[in-house]
Length: 309
Ligand code: PMP
Image 1 (cartoon, protein in one colour):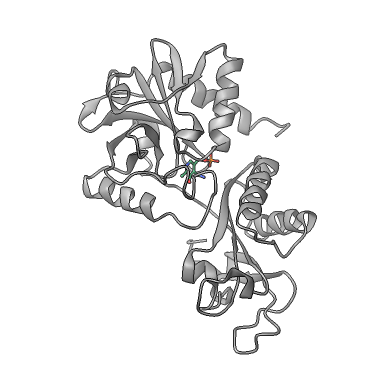
Image 2 (image 1 turned 60 degrees about the vertical axis):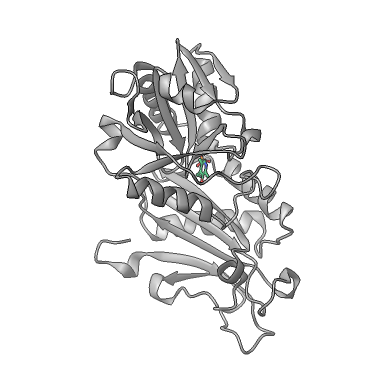
């Protein structure tokens, strides 16, 4: 927690490296550690090769939001890369909740990271005895404060999103370099976010968000197969739209569609719902977040703060 009180930024870290005496030892059980003491081995394959997966999860009113959906996606990712998490699910859930409590997070964000763990130099993942699990509970604000109200400008990135048939975006891996390259393009252009396209030129997603546009009262979003993560916020927005009797169509979108749409917004756990008011110098709609964007944003916050959640 960056409040001049680093001691409060507590992190759970679980690792078993006992047989590898030349590596750092963290002990065999889950420990709540101060940020300064939470260390990862230089031989951790998450660091050496980006061999690992992660989830970003929100906490609203002290409750971990959509934890089941996040864990499901995490376990799908670990299954695909054949990575075992060193805690069973119930202990993992308990550790997540404990970290949130220990950091006194009422409204905040959890970063859950599972890496292959410490091994030797060389790609072989099976040399790594135990995966490393890191749970961080903190605050997050991915974009400048004012854009949440006024809307955000974006550019189209030249860096494309992962080819869906390579390491597809469905796998939430620690490899975010093409998204980082796109983010650099955005920042170099003086805007906070970039839109990424796929290998065929269709709209994929933003660097950490899914994309929606509104055209003639109908909502469109690219199918995940085009090359985007199946966002948990995306799915929620689709459901809320249906509840609001708004039609949602999943269809390939082009840059042209983004230029001429009436409304444009992004969704993500960290970003929540954020209106886009300009892309590549073209004003979206009347240059303000549109009525459907606003309505869905309102419904979104009603939902995440509803007592049953
Ligand atoms: N796309 C990418 C590349 C992301 O990193 C994220 C953030 N997890 C999203 C989309 C939004 O997904 P979610 O709503 O599950 O956070």
